[in-house]
Length: 388
Image 1: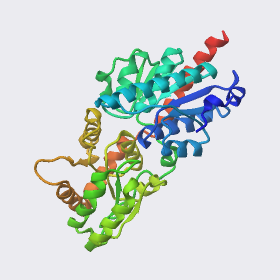
Image 2 (image 1 turned 90 degrees about the vertical axis):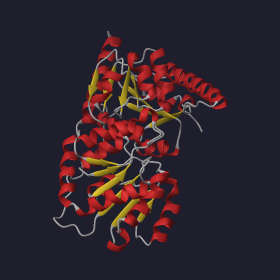
Image 3 (image 1 turned 180 degrees about the vertical axis):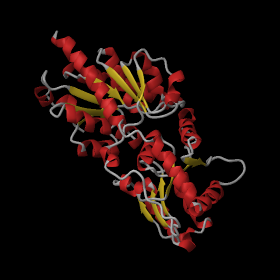
Image 4 (image 1 turned 135 degrees about the vertical axis):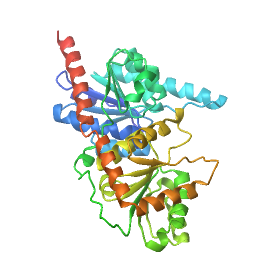
């Protein structure tokens, strides 16, 4: 793949009058989509600026960044591993990614780097610190990730989705609780769905994140069967990632009609037209649920680092917006636990309405605009110093 390191025309576009915004990270929608939401807002202020995303070059990143008409720089990187051989490969790849990021920053006049979190954000974020390029970090979860913790003392600004991150970070610059930036398509939706007084056929959306989730694909169809979805003809839409074919076959085997897709592009409209959602508890997914005021049964990913999805879910559960089911329970299998929650959610319309209102109160529709405003202010101050 040709990289931006080999494209000299970028410098010709990036004059002193055209700032260059670099967004570092991706690999999942939870990290990538907040960055794209901020770009949408920045373009209102800087329509002729250059926007570059840097990351691992995953298909999801390439597809969505291209659709947003931004440049892309793939760099070598991989998650941390405790296995000795993988740990050595991690160090080698991170060094290669850091080296390429340094080369990029030294070749191009970059105004600011925005770290989106996750392992793929580390090489460019670290290079920004080395090259004294202003660094802003976005933290989507209630427990800050490794890269955010590592670089928090070097960032000019940290924008957090949850106030719970404050005691866990040693920030040298300001930390602002902005909420999670959400893409414009969610802002364009009617965020409060209309629930009928007696909904005979619930509309259920199943989400496992941008890459699907094997336990949800395996247990949710069984839970829906036990809850009577096959008899009552519930309307079911299931985002299953790469396991869409197998998940569709399981629904067919259980006699349940369901629309199964690897990825749902128009997720905002589907959410707002759903009575409730069964979902993981990533920070970006929760922000989108809040924007569409959609009540949810959350199944936090139990292997997430620092159990951050459970902490995210607890914030929303405490507000009355969700129910939480533990994937690993000593008491019952996941499908049995989910079936009990599904039965209650389907029957109790007033509970869904109350949860929807609680979700609506958690929404932060101005998050992307606030983050873009603060990034713009940092860039303007930096450009003023250079001009002086």
